[in-house]
Image (cartoon, rainbow, N blue to C red; front, side, top):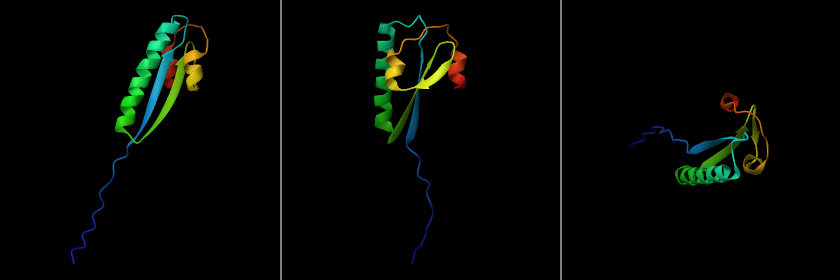
Length: 89
């Protein structure tokens, strides 16, 4: 007798995490390890608050490119530092 059908929107609980790192010659192995720990802690925080998380790895020196996790932390490339290319990507 009380058919009150009001649609209540459900909030989306998906997140995208963009990991952007400078891989120019100024980034040593120790600094990359610190960055890896930071990204891991951020990922764990997002995992607690969101159902689905997509991680995008972007590395840049003079040009930016999207890569996988292994290349993001361990590939060797050198060059200048142009951050704007990563932000545009």
